[in-house]
Amino acid sequence: METDLSFWLPSRPTARPPLPGDRDADVAIVGAGYTGLWTAYYLAAADPTLRVTVLEAEFAGFGASGRNGGWCSGLFPVSPARLARRYGHDRAVAMHRALADTVDEVGRVAAAEGIDCHWAKGGTLTLARSPAQLRRARAASGLDLTFLDADAARARCGATGVLGATYSPHCAAIHPGRLVRGLASVVERRGVTVHESTRAVALGPGRVVTDRGMVRADVVVRALEGYTSTVPGHRRDLAPVYSLMVATEPLPAAFWDRVGLARRETFSDYRRLIIYGQRTADDRIAFGGRGAPYHFGSRVLPRYDRSPPVFAALRSALVDLFGPVPVAYEWGGPLGIPRDWMPSVGLRGWLAWGGGYVGDGVAASNLAGRTLADLILGVDSDLTRLPWVGHRSRRWEPEPLRWLGINAALLAARLFP
Image: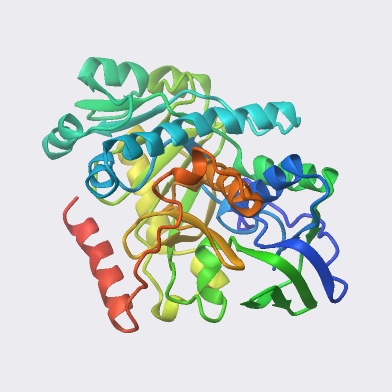
């Protein structure tokens, strides 16, 4: 069983040089994942004279960007109805349309920049495999969401017990490790400086203090997602909750003749405890789910990346869906959850931020990067008027209330599928 960072990044890449001491920049970005790198990309594209520095504690893609399920989707964790109640119908639709369009924007940039990330826009299926799930599927609503009866659903995904499904065209399966590593190289070619092995220890007005020196900058972008809690003063902004994954060996043609997913549709189902999967370009199943416990004090440690009981549950879920399959890789990592599950981007004074994607960040981080570039450059655009711009979630409760509340919710999802 492989035990490296993830199937997508099976070995530690050669590190870029760390920060060589105090430096000046126009924009300092903390975090070399999707949010930080997309922000750097669009800033450099809009104004090549800007001095943009990206600081990363490990290496580009070390966090969720190199470990996720490879769904580049138009999903948003807040429903259109809830957005409409708060921001109005038109702005809610604009948010979801912007995310749907972003799926194609990621594919466009990857093709234009020569990033071979195995992008395949097959859409996403959410299966119903019990009467309760079927009721949820029939009641579901969303941007361009189509209900499929049992025969139509099985024709696309031949999992066991399928009673129906919903389908959205707004999702592409990708290789997330190839995307994030390719994007890091692209921003460097565009003049952005990327320092790896450089840990931010404090963010303040006009500066980022690291273990290698200080970067002075007019704007500091916090792009740390599940690692936000590791920075003093930001421990309760986002809760790091772990999502774990497995990947099979390449599966034979006979398996795919039965299971389908011929267009590399991503798939999930309507159980309350989230699962997600895709057919990879080399004919594996990459499959993940929630269920790992939240750790007291928002701690983020390498040993939490692997949980034998959760891996066993994922293997069992795979067998339940498709029959016995050989699992070759196991991995995991933290994602960032805001108190109200509402992702946000913004710029307030010297501090810009993006994140809280609740696991749906591959496309949303691109939209965040474009939006942050407009905000930093002072551009008034359709993006800067989207409802997540400037949103500030209430901070998570102090411990032990945070630990009790999050783990109670995870337990309820397991007990009432």
